[in-house]
Length: 247
Image 1 (cartoon, rainbow, N blue to C red):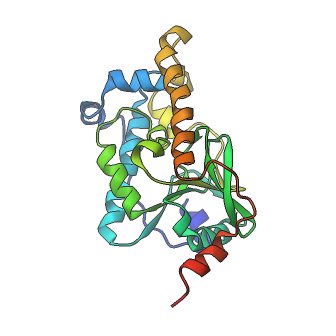
Image 2 (cartoon, rainbow, N blue to C red):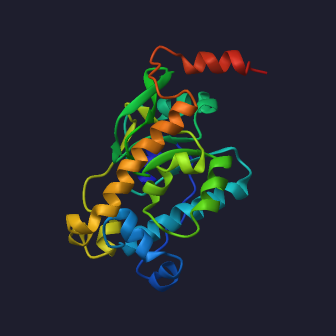
Image 3 (cartoon, rainbow, N blue to C red):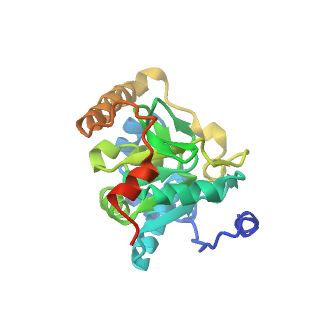
């Protein structure tokens, strides 16, 4: 990552991740294991809980800086040639998002909220998972820190509950980065991908009900905010210039 960041000339601060194996006892003491298994339909991966707390730690460090927005990158991000252009344009449209994904694992059922240069700013009715690269505002970091102290879901699944935490989760598509191929350290720390196997279907019934309910909650939240219909012709940067003229 240091080589990749240096190659595109992007200044950065390294934040040491939380080692799930080394801090297993402390991390599990702050985890509702029964709720996690019910919500996720699988056993806990201790590497994933370490990743969860790494994001909390990054948000705390960000809030201590007093800056309005942070770019957060995990340690296996591959930048596309347009990454810096996408980053600049995303920041120009910052009045239209609170949490902006710059890559994803899943991003299902997008609803375009408008254009940001050649990109679409999408909300999502379906799951929008992955925390490899994103922009986050101060207010959103404060909300999520307050809500996520007790672990009951994987990091990105809790963030995907934007309807519960009341913030605008968006994705900038086509995404300007992706995650490096290969086995994640999360899986490696937890015994490899074999440890990621989900429970049998009958033990996942609470998870199925929850996932179905989340579709309803996401679209209900979006409809209340008049975000349920696509608006691909809206120029969000032009809107920003009209609402917030340059000083």
